[in-house]
Length: 229
Image 1 (spheres, one colour):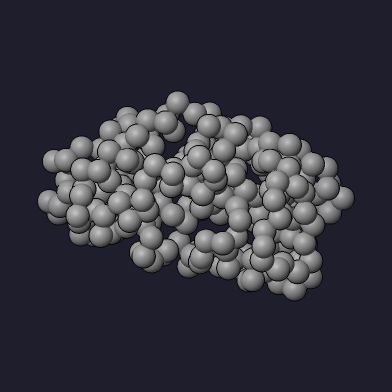
Image 2 (tube, one colour):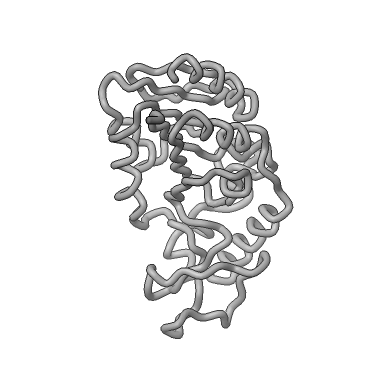
């Protein structure tokens, strides 16, 4: 039986594909106040700005491609039972070919009802428009978990972390909760690999650091994981 490999990915996973991050220098927070585009209050106050912001992000995503890091994680499925938990709202893991991807913070290429979070729809192309409504007649909004909203996918993510034989963290500072707390659910003694140019400031037990960007870091990770098969 293949070992269960659970991989938590963050913004650094997709950065080499041209997806701009929020927190890096020159990232999206430099141009937008978080309160203006990524909260429920922003949607109520200025839905036009919020819609434009995510339409722009969607257009950028459609022009992007999976990088070598995404592809490298697919290769690991030959030897491991791989489950990806991602904080990213892009679909680059899926486009690379990963079979099991759980999105914690929503999906950019989908929209959901403003009144019923269970009504979710695919977006055709890059643009979500006003006047596009759900089956209950309410305006569709981006299928994004905004700051201040619950993260329902954690209910599925926590059991994955608890059952992991190996945990890998790629491209995240581990400062955004509740996602960052997943490493605390890993069973004691389970090896944890962290792939990122900078070490997270939080303490992680039993950790092996690979201080590289995703593409090169995943290649090194693949070599190290061969020793654990």
